[in-house]
Image 1: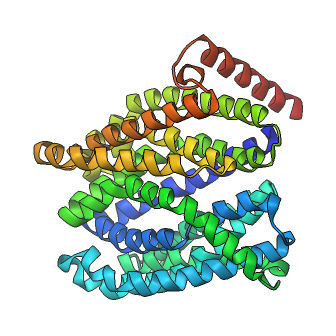
Image 2 (image 1 turned 135 degrees about the vertical axis):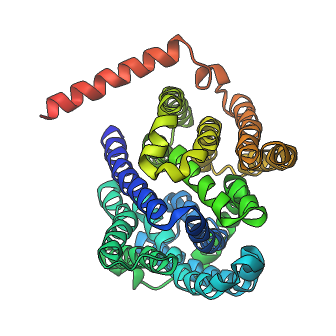
Length: 435
């Protein structure tokens, strides 16, 4: 687990570097207004693809141990289900794009529709193939593949800049090409599974299990992006551009470590027959995630006023307050999403629904008054209230259903600090020994 976690952290760090670089270059090359338009054109199709995924990736990981067919036919069944769901998502989502983009972005309707049509099949394959590698714990291969989209996209931006051909349309094309090349590599690596014969019974089983997970996943998608959705519907492209930069700055760095926890823990917990040991592993992972978040957010808040304008340009200096508010929201957001993802190893779906519904409801109740008072910064503040509401429900569920009290993983104290110190020493000694 430590080796898989370290490899995933390293991969997330590399993705962070490329993601930050693409965000910086896009902001500097396009400016606030076109950066906001780029976000609108790409976010809505990606959201529709996420809604059409039916959580088949998580379902495949959870189904791996009890499937009635071998791994290759299970993957083929997942691909068939994902492609069918993607076609349905395209048919239902494409007519909604003009309304989602709004009349002020009418010139971008065709571009967004093309991107949606091209992205849906890539997303369908990627979701299942990533889950297949995760279920089999092929973390080295999986982490290598995960580098593709962001680094291909960064290379595309560099080529466009050298050719003096940077625009919203060309950046959308570069992002799609990065995803397409990565998916092609995934298909080549898993070609035997891709070409295997799907099993109808497993397709039904995956769809049924995915549907259980997907209610919570949809709410998570909406709750996680509700702030940007509201901005795209209510504010101009320049305001959206500033907010996207704030969100990029606030969300990128800490995810390097925290996302690795649920990424590695999910298949480990799902395969652990001793539920008591699985719960102990979960508590330890959550405690270390919380400690890293507390320390990381404190450090990030201190450098944000200087670092954000330095990286993205003086034109985005007004994004600093929103970035600091979003950093605070990152703590509760990441913790509750880590809980929800890891509990899928126990085939639990209800907590995802209740916690995400609470987060979404709390956000919507506070976003209006705060937006009227502080504009886009008010919406950023509302994300704090929403994520805290969802985290409270997650903490109560862990205590009642699994005997993991909040004091064991959420509250700073001697246990958390001692565990963090011990982990840090082991990691340092391990790296020194490896040399």
